[in-house]
Image (cartoon, rainbow, N blue to C red; front, side, top):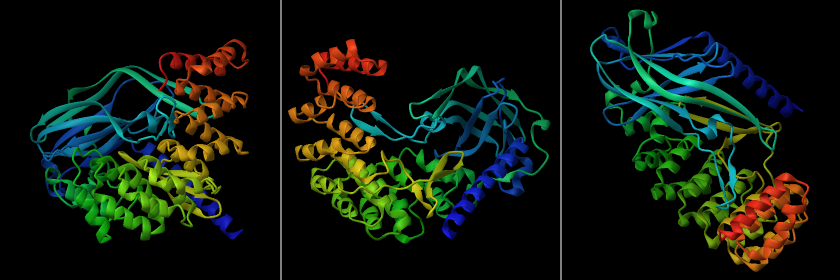
Length: 491
């Protein structure tokens, strides 16, 4: 009872925190940030970025503003909250005189539309959401001493569309036309009278001198630093800086660091991550597993196989998914054993800490409170993630065990098995799918699409009967798609 009360209090605190933060943000109509030390602020130039277009009542966009410094780092300096009737529709930057490349970006659709990952029928794999920025406009400006440049974010025909998914989730999308930055001459009245906030990254270097070493140093001090977004967007990440911090214990392996390493694709971190997987802090072990999967280094396979026997359900789930990413056949026997593991991570709530260029999501439940940072995986069930991994590896040894999962009492497990069978090009997998044509609507739709992937013409007669006689429109459409795919040669 005591733990339950603590969990409830935690949720109440988080909701109160978010509410107060939102209220404060709405009261403050302008964000004012300085890229200069306090002694030089008075002689600086100013860049004012503001949203000026008329928007519908439901409109709610955040435009992330980044400045490129001489070292080529895209440094997120703030955001313009372009909301109808409220928000921070203006960002004012106190900057040294000189030339600046300014970029306006939005969070990509996987983030802003609330997507949680999806299965691709054609390629037979699950695709996670990637909360990265998408540039939508940029401009170069040259500023003299004390000059004020106003950059208006303008666009036409803004619209907000809301749709419901099959799972009852609401997907909200924003569309517009002809978005661009338009420069206008500024005036003293465009600059707030109060002193600006100091840009966080100035602690380790001047704006012009911020490079990757300074960004990593800032990340060591505060994972919520704008350094995270800048490192994620680095075209050539110096992975050794991250490795050195992890090995020296000055940098914590968080989901932020994991995404930065994953984006780099540098396998030089494999050895360090394997050590952390085996003996690192428990809160970081599943993060190490996920990152090893993203790096797709077969050298990590055995360490991930060993993790399938770990006491942490969270880690076992992430180990399965990491093996699925690597697709190493040496893990098949261990994954078949993992099919007997019916453990699931119980998630009662999630919450997200966000700032302009990145976010951190957390898992939590009523009994344990916060149980770890969240990184995307297909399922929260070891059995289902093992099925998915076997379907990605496509080893014939896994066929019978996957077919056995078609008898599972849980619908999601049966669907995972159908999806995995669609990746095998064999008579046995084809026959198993054909035998599922009389299953429930949710399974039948996927079975039909998987039969299309096989390209086997022996399914055509049954599929044509479904097109003619099935009562469900979605199932009939799936059959039409499958017939077309078979006639075009399948996978």
